[in-house]
Image: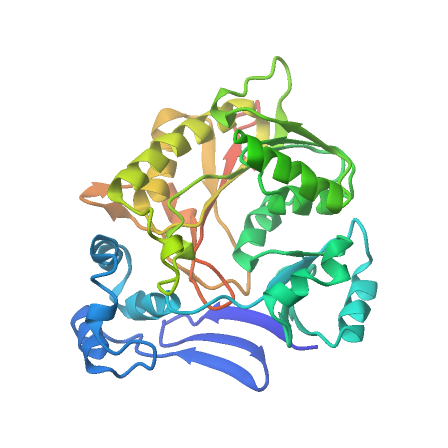
Length: 371
């Protein structure tokens, strides 16, 4: 079976997405300067973009910021991403079905699939639309859960183990909570927090459908969650954010809410959440912080702020073969970040992966050392 393997070559000469012997896409124009990119946009050399006016008047402030955030050589491939819908990717729910049995069901339904190199429960599907797949008994019985590959990454990096105590601070709709439970084989304990009532009930519904048995749900703002004695081995903070990595310029609903004010609002929330996470974490424990946005204020700046506020945490390097990435920012708007911020992961968006930011943070144990 072919493997979905996404990687960036060392010298950034090309970024290649290879998911079968017959389907490989090379994202070209990496060597373009930003002025050349504007010429390409106005010159109509790309099938999906005929004029630069088709892009920049839609979200001028966003694209101006994006030019400052991204290196020249990857600006255009990431801009191109905003015109494409994502491939259908799913997670096998091993709480209800064995992996091999799940693959047989797909074959019986005449659904083609490709494996993902860095997570055995993840699949890319073809020969079926997302809507048609959602209607199948495979989804209705909880055997499969539709989930983006980038969304699976934070839990893979959290590496939850059976018997551990895990906190999912912003849990709805339950994608990552159920992924955590599956990796724990329903053994150990998970506290899942959601403050919005309708999302809270959606979370509970997804947990029931997928057969999760080790989760306690709390309806509260995670910034104000202060249990008397409970502390956690690992904490997932999939933070609310401006969701820039999910923009699709053909769907106004994905970006109509965006503003600089929204970014600042999200950054304030994120700082409160991550600070409380450090208080709830056991010494020697791990926090995985994730957003689906490009905004440095919500990414590197939040981690830099945490490092200045606390002395007992450390940002750990992230090594995961097969995941497209580009460097975390070293500074933003004249402000240099703590060198540890270099260890954060920025996921390069493709038709398989959304743009994500992930930081893995370890808390010092009583001896003063991290993992």
